[in-house]
Image (tube, rainbow, N blue to C red; front, top):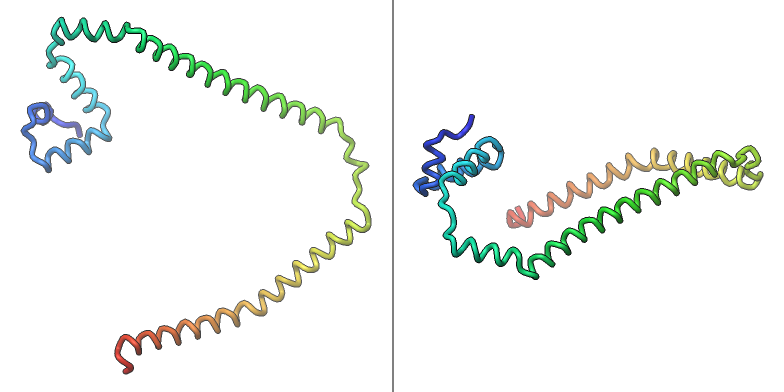
Length: 164
């Protein structure tokens, strides 16, 4: 549901109470339609700037500092865009190079030595042994840690209750 026109008028006049203002601002945060409506009302209700102020703004906008700042900002934007494009091109080049070099490699000549096979096999044996130990020791560790926790809780309760 959108905010009615009278609520928008109350906001613009500054006659909303705190609760209404909070509700209004929360709604504006999530509703682009009402925010656009408020901005349109602000644009149509606002008075134009006095001519001397318009001239000052135009002078300042065309001043060398502002012009240079605008050019620097624009150049920085294009430079960042160029850098992003170069990073992408280099990444694509490396990826294509790796793709084509891997496709030309002969992996059938890569056979692990007997020593490497033995190391791999023994590491599997060690892993299964560690798994068996953890299955045997785990329940006992849990049981004993639970007993320690219970004893500490009892001791804490006795201290809090004055030794009772």
